[in-house]
Image: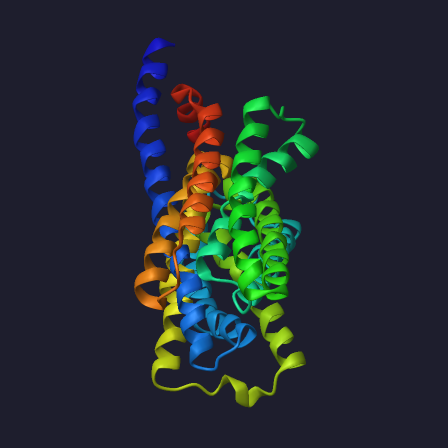
Length: 325
């Protein structure tokens, strides 16, 4: 039926554009996270405490939005239709949330105690390679020579910065880099596992449940490792904890989940290459971090590798078709 096909085609470009905009916004908001954590460290607030406050601020917002979304969905669901949110789906979503918002975040927050915000963000930027690697292992997607070249270029950039910072900061850089790589792997796994659940539940409901699952895990970790009195913050520290829960968490989480639902996890990951630009700018201007010739070279190589990686997804129609799948 030509008329039906014609009617459905115009919906694709706006959906793809909306996904791209959401991915850019999410990456930019997430890029502020390292800056806020570094400022919190200067206020004497450690990584686990910051992560706990992140959940204290963010989870009630996620729960409220999730409940509203679920009630609206129930109101429009036809009688007798199978429920989208079953117990197995609920448990899967909670588990994926623990991977993405507890494990990946804990490793990332902890790494910032040892390395600069710039270096942390550049390593995290390489998680699209892990997304594709998981796709090849679990979904038999092909890894091409250009993708391998892109990976080598990006990791050459990381090696340049690592070598430079290692000679200045010592073994702390090795530990910090290892923690961030662990975070990147965990976050790539989160993105792969999130896609089918977002397709089923929608971005808002998925994100609300996923973050709500991670919240108790984070709080339990805090209570096992810290006295409850460590949560007492005031003044600048309180403002930073509010920022880590809202600007650096709630806003980007919904943006990223919406983007994954519209354009898929691999494209959302690719678009995340805007984040180091934001982080570098903020790290230099707000934190006063050094940006040497070595940092410039390493950053250029990482961004160049990601650019090479994106070229394999050039066919626009493929992107548009998958964005409406």
